[in-house]
Length: 216
Image (cartoon, rainbow, N blue to C red; front, side, top):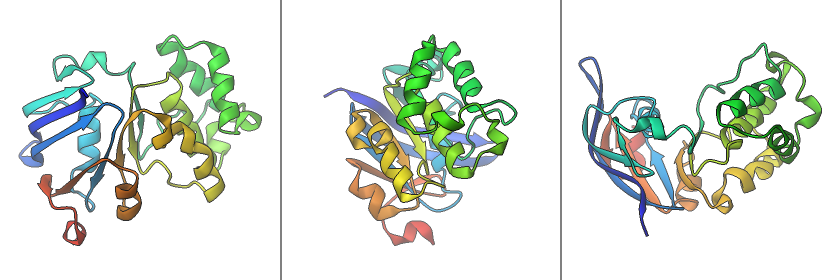
């Protein structure tokens, strides 16, 4: 099986501060990688590198066949990203946000309604995002991430603010059963390990064993 993600000795710095160093991992197509570690471990930085939003400063990185950073322009159409921020315009409605994102990727407007209904937010889709609860905003963020039917999902605490019913609702779209390659960042170690095929521990931006020491 081909690797969807192949990293060898990847590095990333912010000025003099090292955010990632010596990160290596291989993730087969359709598999799930769990990225685990405490605050400041480099988890979100790694996701942003994989999304093509940050340039790696060293090592070798291939994502969906694209060599980073030179070919990162190939990734937006094939990657869905749910981050700490919902990446939504608060003054626009949910539908307007999805239409704007969909137009960037040539998505038919009928697909927008389909996703809104799958996530059971069609009835609130014409309200400004600023007026919606955190749970509904999170569902919209997930809708945005899957709208263009990406090959790879990058999920940073993607079930945050979702009640159990909503978490169950999104499972077919972003869970293992979606069939997509996934990278999960989560503080729920046992849950992340249970739904992953590969695990990567990070501490201080460097690979570390996946155990309780990651969070100290």
